[in-house]
Amino acid sequence: MNGVHDMGGMHGFGPVRPEADEPVFHAPWEGKVYAMRRLVGAWRRWNIDAGRHSIERMPAAEYLRTSYYEKWLQSLEMLMVERGLITAAELASGRADPAAPKMTPPVKAADIPVIATARGSSERETSVPPRFAIGQKVRTRKINPVGHTRIPRYVRGRTGTVELDHRAHVFPDSNADFRGEAPQRLYTVSFAARELWGDAANPADAVLVDLWEEYLEPA
Amino acid sequence: MGDNHDHDHDHVHDHDGQDVPSATALRVKALESLLVEKGLVDPAALDALIDTYESKIGPRNGARVVARAWADPAYKQRLLKDASSAIAELGYSGAQGEHMVVVENTPSVHNLVVCTLCSCYPWPVLGLPPVWYKSYAYRSRAVIDPRGVLAELGVSLAEDVSVRVWDSTSEIRYLVLPLRPPNTDNLEEEALADLVSRDSMIGVALPVAPEGRAR
Image 1 (cartoon, rainbow over the protein chains, first blue to last red):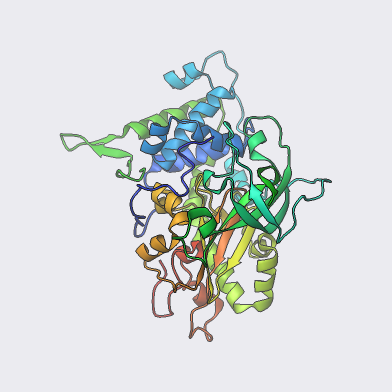
Image 2: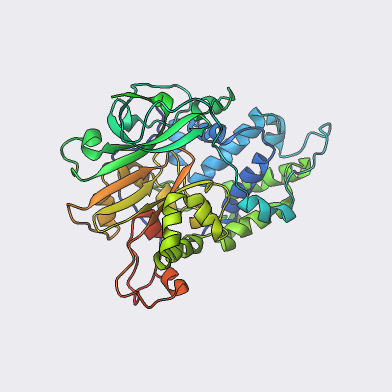
């Protein structure tokens, strides 16, 4: 979707302001939100792409107004209700429905060292040969998917060169809507800065973007 | 803490000067107690996970990877060929670091990492991202004005140095291998790691000279 989250190339957000000696979490609730989202995720009622999409579905003004962990909180509440882990009434009241069965958390404290270093993967086996080769010129398709997508607006309809081939990965556009993982080839495509931004850009510079095969066509 | 307002701390000061919990802190507390009551999360697991990212998984991990690559040419070759496996040799793996690619700075190439669509970041080697990395300013500008962003952050590059900006749009996570500073031939790996800042592994800083201090 052409949402406000797709920020590459926008103007007007001011300077980048680093914070000296920044803490990992700026308040205890931020850590709680982070940890709740990860551990509720262990119920596997949604996937990482649906999680990203839920943040993108926030109203644009609300997206801009809220902090990173406020977005995580809002989308966590939304996902839990949508995917049936809690009801809207439970969320509003803060109390469990007395009729609902008590569940057992899938992750205990003793599991955390394993959870923290476990290697999941979005790579999937495929027998489909790659359509593009490293070094090949490709053009990104001019598309405007209304759902979740990982092709930023600023590279659509542009010509670049395949730089890396990452084999097949889960396709977010499909997975985010629970329409299946539909794995397909993933490439890193290099775009000259001038191809994206015009002659004002430095001729030596490039932007490299990870793009799924469906986003690309031969140049 | 979006870009334009202050951090929402757990407590705000009311007009009597008393500490009262912020609305967000109360909302999070209510959600936590609901999830615990329903048996959806184990409260001790929440605390253990928070502690993991506050005290165990952070940019020191990435600094050790860089220092090893500087000290051991064979390791560096493995790192550039298959970063996930080479990083796992040092014991670092996990969420948001499953598919690592290490990009090497040279005298003629400077790499910079961003995620314009959200805030993807290699957690196992750098920990959780700083606020500026997640800021709308960085996400919007890093791809269109990387040299302007770098200059603001104190890094000025020659015009003929190629800036390569990696936009993390998939589950591939990028780590910059900075140039080894001069006059560090006699340093051991741990001392080399002290020179490697978090920001140098994102590409918005250069490693400090031995007498300096890593940010």
